[in-house]
Length: 60
Image 1: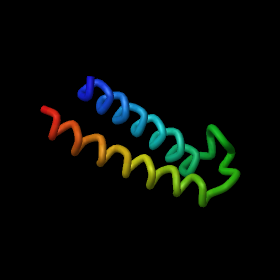
Image 2 (image 1 turned 60 degrees about the vertical axis):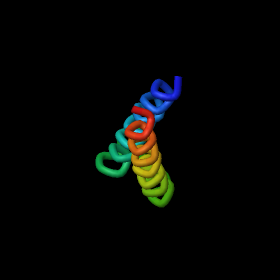
Image 3 (image 1 turned 135 degrees about the vertical axis):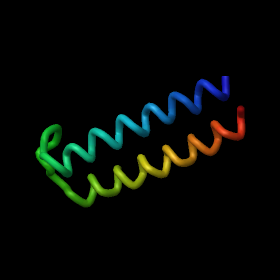
């Protein structure tokens, strides 16, 4: 159960990172309405990915 939740959170982190990085790079999903929010979501996705990865290594 714990392993599955960490994998799901890694997938969510990657999806959020891709979505907001694309918005920063080429203005596709949200037309770059607020650049500060895009940067905040990218940083948050990286943090979630790191926490998920470290938890996944512990659960193994």
